[in-house]
Image (tube, rainbow, N blue to C red):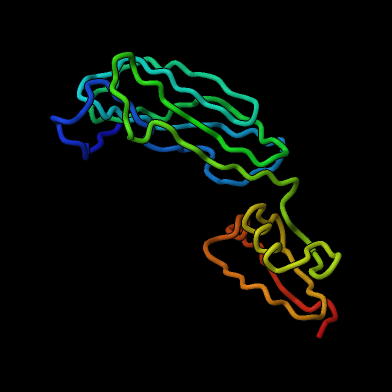
Length: 193
C-alpha cells in the first residue's frame, strides 16, 4: 500500500468510502482488435474507518463482472494494483466502465467511484505508403491525423498527397504511438513534385 494525503476534512467524511484512485492498465486508448488487455486499478480508502472488503464492478461491451477484494485497507491508504480482469479488444470502439460498490450503510457520494475509459479499436497499425485524396486510402489530412493518433504506426509510414488544395486545419499535439520506437512519418507529393 502507499500513503495518500486526504483532501477531505475529517468531520465531513463518511466512515466507509472507497474511491478509484487511478486506472493503471490499459495504458493507451487504442489497441488492436483481438488483443488482450489487463484491467488494473488502484483503490483508495477515503473514509475514516479501515476497510476489509469491497465489490468492484466492470463492463466492456457485452462483457462484465465483479471482483471481490478482501484485505486490510486503512483510512487514507491505497491498495496495491488490483487485477480486475483481462478484456479482449472488440471490433467496435467501446468504453470500459469500472465502479466501486461501497459497503452497506455508506453515504451516497459525488467522489470518483466510477471510471469511464474509451478504447478505440484498430484492425492494424499503420506502416508503409498510403495515398491521400479523393477515393484514396484517406480522403483528407484530418482523417490521416485521426488514424495516426488512434492506431499508431509500426514501421516507417509515408502519406502521398494527390495534387489539389487541402483546406484541413490540422494540429499535431503529443506523441503518435509507435514514434517512440524510432519510426518516422513522412508527407510527400504523390506526383513527386
